[in-house]
Length: 425
Length: 115
Image (cartoon, rainbow over all chains, first blue to last red; front, side, top):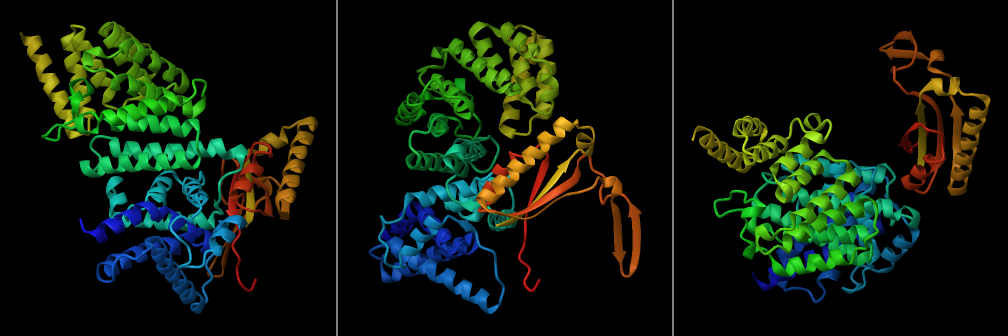
């Protein structure tokens, strides 16, 4: 990587969101602001290798982008086509207008503008998909083709979704501002949900190429850290960050050399990132015990991830403690998926029969999870361990029929063959 | 922003309401209207008759078809509207929490030049 590449990469990482937020605050046109900033970065990639990296990359980019917005506004004025403007708090607009393009130095952007940008992108009046896409484009600055690949849609589809979302920011009257204190907690939950959705979209097996998946999960963590920095001491952000950092610390051990999914029990724990685990545990310790709502759910999930993270070997895992945490999580969510995970922990702690009983006790679980392969897969595994191979075979077959992920289906097929062998032998 | 609040609800709720319930609904509307005035202004507001009184007219190339009833048969009917000028959709959403239970559609009003 050359010096110019380095300068571009760090300008993008450090300044994209700040510059975009400032442009939105100033010109109240998120569509033009984003186009203009992307153009400014493209111009930098062309001219910096020739003219050298400017003393203040941020000021250079700001001037270039501002000029482009003005060019487009003039072109619109000629076409006599008045586009509506985004609602921007008077104070924020005044702050953004204070800095004449080219006059501002690197540290002069106000962090609040990035926060305003986050809350606009995660506004509840936008669809959940739009929120995630907008946040990745506006706050994380990811290129559209990357976002498209992460969500498994065509580039054109994602571009159209973003265009609609940008129009909607303005047309629906979504304000560029931090919510009022009495609404902040609710809205922060919305932001946290978007970040976690982004993280899990990167994490879900079978979605997108591996390198990108890891990058997306990493991006979600970076955004949560930013949020934690801008709004310090918020439990929901802390708990989410702890959860994501702990899960992400296992990324290198989750996939084998051949690209197959490696289950937690079989992972090479030497490949877990110890430093990240320590950081995740410290974050978790900073979340108060008495939190409620979404922060409570994230805290419990992070505690479960922590219990796995501190076990040196799979056999050292405190399954009883994990089962208790799942019981608390189930009480908070009533989710059949949580009951399923809890039954696995109970099976590990007390034996397969106790786990199976817990699954069968959950009224309506078959109906609620009828398309999900995890219910028959879990049941099959527990039946096999409980010495009921004939029933296990039937459940494995059902699970294989429902499973859409190649790596997981391979694992289930292998287990089916092993159990069949036991049945014959 | 100028925004229209379209209030949808089951008409029978109002029809079946006791005098006491009706006065409670009216008080909630008063509180809602006061909130709008505090944060902006009210441009227009009306309550509509039930859909039993609605007539739907379709004009296609000079031919007019008139039918009895509303444009669409819904479980919840359009029962009234407000048009207000407010700082943002956030204020509008907050205002809705003061109303009786409706499904409210918020539609920003577009400026049409020359009208």
